[in-house]
Amino acid sequence: MSIKEKHKPSIPHEPYLKPPLHNNFEISEGYIYSQNERKIHGQYFHKAVDYSTSWGQPVYASASGYAVASYHRYTIQNSDKTLKLFKNKPLGNGLGLFVQIYHPEKICGVKNGRITQYGHLSKIANEMKLKTTKTEKVDIVKRIIEKNNRLRNNKKSRKEIEKIIEFHKKLMKKYPWINYKYGYNFSENIEEKESYLYTLKECETLFKQKNKYVTWINQGDLIGYTGTSGLIWGELKYCEEKVKNIKPFKTWDEVHLHFEEAVRDEKTFFKKEQRDPYGIYKSVKHYENVESLKDTLFF
Ligand SMILES: [Zn+2]
Image (cartoon, rainbow, N blue to C red; front, side):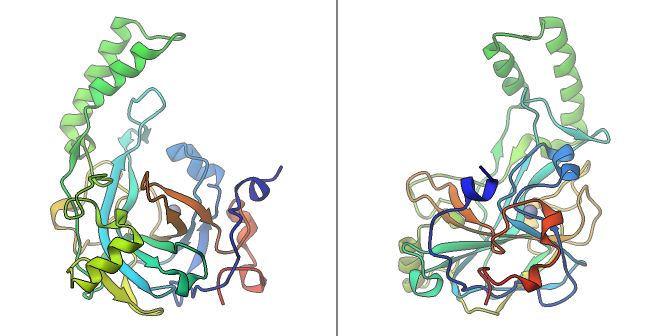
């Protein structure tokens, strides 16, 4: 069974999107990560497309809806919970500074609506107000020990674990950002909860109440500018407390826009039923001639 047969959500394929970038881009990752990128962070599914481009390119809303802006970043860990390193430096991943737009059924043609996400921005458009909740401290050492204790086979000896912990303590001192995580506050309290976890109903209500974090955006409106936020490698090059505008910096990935189309589970809040806007559901080499495709979510 192909990835497409297995993972393509069975929902009406009604085109409602316009490309989020107008010029100067190339698809650099497809629904499944390329071998090269898999080697860096170890993930197989991307469930999105990446458009590589230059820094500061304007990003436009691919469809109308309620927009929120937030920040999301975590440290990449191996399956044994040790930190994954690339050329001896720790890696951050996540959407970084991003915009999420909720598209009601009348816009996207799908019952209960859909969301689109625009990640790794360097700046969000002035119309939107950025909302970030408290950071979460991650106890890396505790995670490593607990994971090892749970193992039945290949359990590391006390001596081996002590060596790993010593190494990680040095890393934590050199790169303090690795001890923190931004995003995914599952609080029931709407004021505390991450804005991108609001349900469509909550968005509608908050918008009516003139909440400053929920903005109605029309298709084609400017929502931000491209960058590399969230993609940290080694030193953190910007202050996460002040992520409204991020200056250019080099990282483990190229400058790109992460573009994703999905829905959020109203109970678990996790994203699900991600659709490949091009309907390909493969790795990047299959996205060469997307302009000629007919059956896409773009019109
Ligand atoms: Zn991506």
